[in-house]
Image (cartoon, rainbow, N blue to C red; front, top):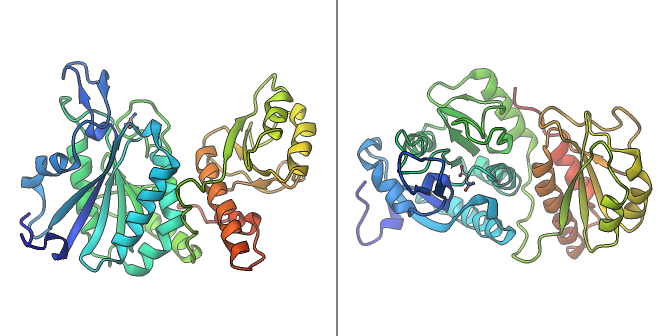
Length: 357
Ligand code: ASP
């Protein structure tokens, strides 16, 4: 792992960015692994811990961006991460990037990096890999070290095997980072258990062709919002007994967009129709998704699209929220550049991305 001592950053290396999470967590006592505090151990220590297992010739540099419990992830931290990833991808000495992250909101970060840096990473032939852990670092059988090692190995896999892009590695599986979805509170594979994925050791050809289809379709990254410039977007969940006030109170606010996590195929309670009309007439952007947690929300299914809503395609509610924020920001930037593109133009490009099989 030795780097050029005077200029370590000029030696070709894999950059490991630390964001915190359970992978950097410490339990109060190893026999109580669920009682712990996330974001306690520095990323340099995480890397040092696996040093002896790192494949020969792979050089690593680590950099701590944050050390948080990812349930507290902020938009300004996403801006910092996105800009760091973008500029590091452009650095000829950086061969690939691994990001250690909490799993609670890894889904949001995954889609954010795909939409803001995915094309860039693909064009430069470099991989960005998110990883995390479900057990704190001092728990017996902690999964962090093997996940980090797998992520580093995946970052150094030859490009012939799999193209540059934004991925995630967890519990021996690899998926596109935009397919991450934490669907269990504690299982070791929680963030990838319902994501199309491949074994990290042996790439599944049908998964790989799905990855390539997404990369062919994603031809232009969206701008990263500046800190403090992220449009305000909320998620509202439809349910039995939904009340009009859930929407009308938001329609009176400064919110710029609402993601409606509807039931079934993304339909919402009729009690929301009138207040949603009010929201739409105020220019609040509306996106429809499904609270079921998987599958697709398609335009005009099961009914004709109400109120200029856009269907989210394969995006879950948390992913649709990030996508809508980026689309609203892209519209703002386009206007400043004298182009008449709308958030709907940008969001539609995201919602039609093909599914990774
Ligand atoms: N609460 C933790 C976090 O997201 C969970 C984890 O990392 O698994 O930071």
